[in-house]
Image 1 (cartoon, helix red, strand yellow):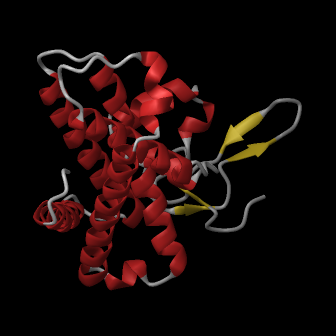
Image 2 (cartoon, rainbow, N blue to C red):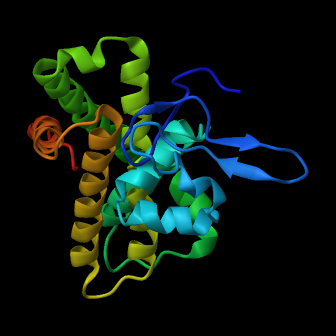
Length: 234
């Protein structure tokens, strides 16, 4: 049996000792939350595809299941891959629109300095965005980020909730007249997902997470302006 507080109820966010009890011979019984009298985590019986769909719909229950009741440790790799996607998009925008890109030359293009420069800029902007969020939340609710584990959990939540950036690549590959609109929708979706991740992780209302995100965007745009003054294409 897990230690007290190892899990969370996906409905009321209260701590729970276990998600289910195994009676052997394939008989499992989902634990009931002592606070709200609902199943602690109904998603343990759901197919991963259903959980993903609920996460895409930004349901708080799905976020709590992923963040508190699973052992997903892909946030670091996901962050790097999302940054690569963003860097690739920016690198493509630097290329001459009349230039034909041969798929066989992708490896050669990936070695170009501009791609790595775009990756570095995207990394700095992402870092600025996250720092802005952490500064705002620490200033507004210092008690919620009083330990190192609190910071790590929130960082993990923010990185995982940025999975929408993976849609940048198909949006560019299937280029059409509405590509700029698609990219704008992807940006909005990622911000909504980030807001829900903050809300679920720290058990906040809807206002404070958005204030933190707005300050993060301000800091990120400040970095963009700095690069532009330095004469760098961003």
